[in-house]
Length: 115
Length: 92
Figure (cartoon, chains in turn yellow, blue):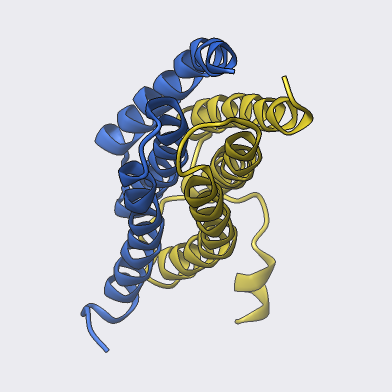
């Protein structure tokens, strides 16, 4: 067991646990705007962290083409880290703009300010 | 070293399979369109990460090239649906 393999395995396990918690939250939360929080846990914690873990784990093993797998995992992790917040923000803006989501807020300061 | 990969796979396979099943339930019964798109988005990033783990497990480089395309495709889906919801059209 090399140190890179152990570090990668720890990161992948953390990612799996975050992914399960994000999925449970996405199923249990009441409306769309609250579900965005669970979706962030599920994408950043559940996809970006295990991809960086796979990059370290592939460097720790002695499989063929390990540098290809490590480099592509690192690139995919950076893409997920950039694309997931941008996509969630675009989707939240569109849902709020088109009134597609039923939600019952206690106070809505944005609506009061726009009157 | 192969024994470590097999043990890791036994630990994380139930976590990922349970998460993908729960995302699929939300994607099927989601009340509105943004809920469905959010669930499909999470599921795509999740499958991309799982494909990278499977690439190490099967010692294959073909799976990891699919993961890059899948991560980019999920972002494209988000942007197109947001464009459709705001402007009622998909295009430039």
